[in-house]
Image (cartoon, rainbow, N blue to C red):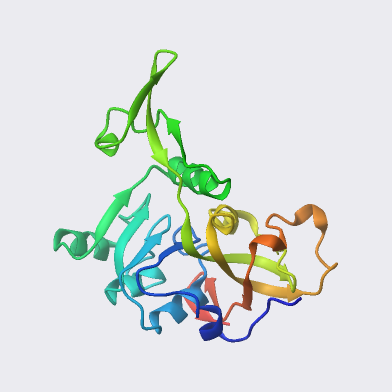
Length: 228
């Protein structure tokens, strides 16, 4: 059965105020820019956004940030958007900083049905404050909870109408992990093809994880974000 829709409003119908939303991308690369733009037009608030970073100033998730729709950001690299620091200093947003590998592993653990895992990363730093410590074979670890969310918004290169996904080079980044760690997975893609047209060896995310597909309306160019 086809999971394709032409309506961004329909694709985002499952996103509600207070939801935790996974958003793919590294900077703007591999970010679901069309879905993010759709979210900026939707009447939602108090969102927790889990993403490597919260876009750039006035771009991607940066627009959602400036609309004050984000209550909390969970990610690894917030300094690329100076607006985040300003809002944090004013007490307008909560931030949870995770090392990049920890963010990836927490998403993987969420997708695998685990409650969390022990890691040496961040032991002895401020990032370990308030977290459980445990010594295993003479080594100190801290416990990191798995990450799961209500909705994942991700970007892929191609999809068939069933929802099998192929990614493009580094634009893959966190997207496949996020596809496994949310109750609803919405994906935007550059191209939609019929079942059987994708090389099975290139499929990274199987169709079972995907709930809805939409063709991208925006693309990232050397000049910035542009309409397709």
